[in-house]
Image 1 (cartoon, rainbow, N blue to C red):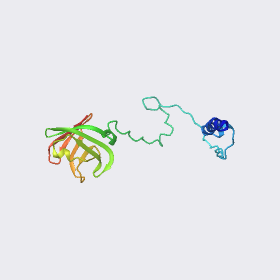
Image 2 (cartoon, helix red, strand yellow):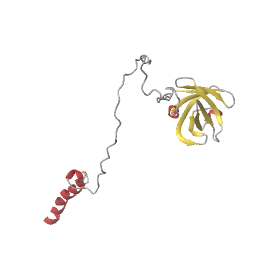
Image 3 (spheres, helix red, strand yellow):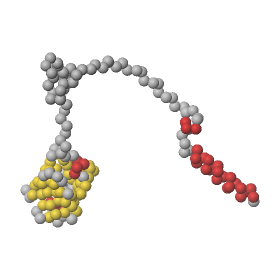
Image 4 (cartoon, one colour):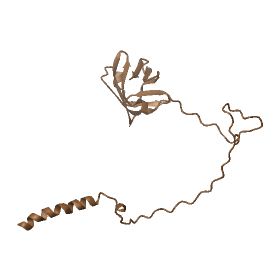
Length: 176
């Protein structure tokens, strides 16, 4: 009876030691690993650095001095406009309004017929109820129906507002 009582008491420290053995890295306790380190990289030859005087801030070089390397410098590509519209700018909930009806529009990046998944909630207009997809074509936001047919086309009016027309010619807008 005493032997059986001691077995569980001795088993606890053994289980604890086994559990803690997995908490450390083998290399951290001094046991060599079988992984080989990659060989060191070969040194790369570097051309000597040349120095010269820069032209003044105005851009014109002093008479008799040319700008070193000016013939090989190309113009940098223009940075994209800060106001460029991206798909992620349109995600989430919006208020949509058309022909006296105001309700909620939700846009996600789930692929769907006609672009990405869209849904409306609380709309009484059959046109707004039919919206099931959206897509961004350049600067135009196209809201589409179940078969991918265009329900409305809108463009940014600045800030978080988009205005346009439904396929039937009625004014439509969505905003936050």
